[in-house]
Image 1 (cartoon, rainbow, N blue to C red):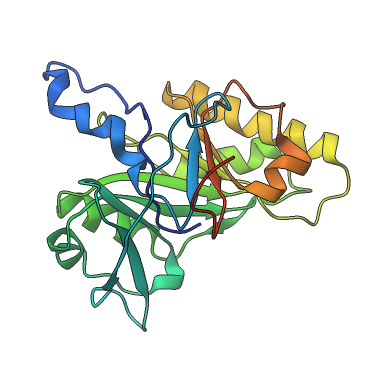
Image 2: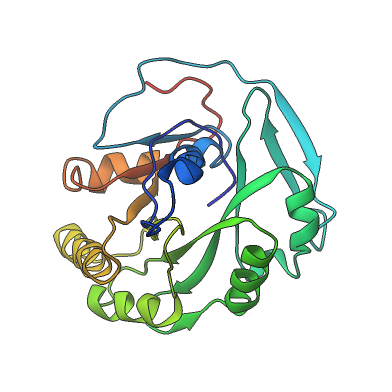
Length: 229
């Protein structure tokens, strides 16, 4: 997964007794989700194309030499992170106009992202709207993977929907993969009361998932492509 930029209508968990306008911006939060990333809802193609001018933000708030591409012409920017990025200075992230973050929580049936709890707490403390994602491991029970995510992620009203990252190719049977993915999505939806987002890359989605998950929002990575087709 990587940072991105495409307008979309994205639901957030309802916040009781607060004006909905305060959270209207959340409907645009997938306005930045990776180089060439395209977000579809119900597999709808985008009906307009935008030429992007890239600006590069040197991420001094990350360890190492990470760089985050920002797209000019958009007012809402976000990132996704995991333990791979090391220690993150979240107040500095907020000062660089990053409005939201998707944070890795878990992987497979047993793996917990070592920095999830810290990232989750500090991103929210910095005023960054947050969501969590799970990296799906094929050939592992979807219900067990969903239970791990649910155990780790305390979504609250106003948080972004859960995301399931499905792109690992080492699976034995595609029908079984689809069953386990759907089981994860449905269990997580039942628990949190909001539809999870299915994330994949274009090639994987086209070969293995297309047409089977049209009832869930789709976040599709299509790298190095300026115009979706």
